[in-house]
Image 1 (cartoon, rainbow over the protein chains, first blue to last red):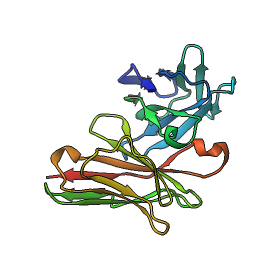
Image 2 (cartoon, chains in turn green, orange):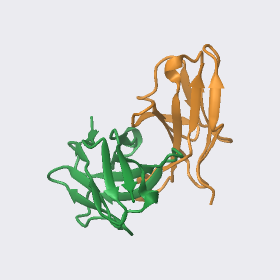
Image 3 (tube, helix red, strand yellow):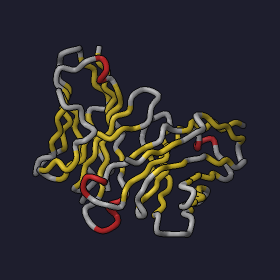
Length: 117
Length: 116
């Protein structure tokens, strides 16, 4: 079974600064997807960024980028120019590229990000 | 294109009552997933359904919980004889049916169930 580990329960960053959230995972599969979801106080789960394991290039979405290290099974999220609206719980998630019973997402325990003035 | 819709947003039940949670997937999506989030924890997979079929229910408790996704209408997660430990946020997600786009699940706003 796959596992996802987020070792930072809480992180803090000053507005306009950069912060990196860590995520490691364990799998024996070679093809899979990785995601970062954001959960603000409203508790809505919002997709931030996704990475396909067969792609070597790191995904980027505006101020959000990832550092995907497949051999190390590491998938960190970098938030640049942090804004107050980035304050939220961030969850890393894994999904097999297989269909059927492997379609579920496996989540980490989350990192709570605080953004200060 | 409307997102994933869930209702009710908040549901209060007394111990022993039944809870019914509804989920309407995004337009064009035929795959539905249910997840549960206990307080201060991450989301845990419960069940994966396609129209009229349960594909994976490995995360669903064996008793009191059931799910369906009929040909017409929303997906329903049903919890019979609720207990206080069922208090949680229940999230529904949907994904499209074709190609590698199947990989991305889009979440609804969740239903917060409180059992008194």
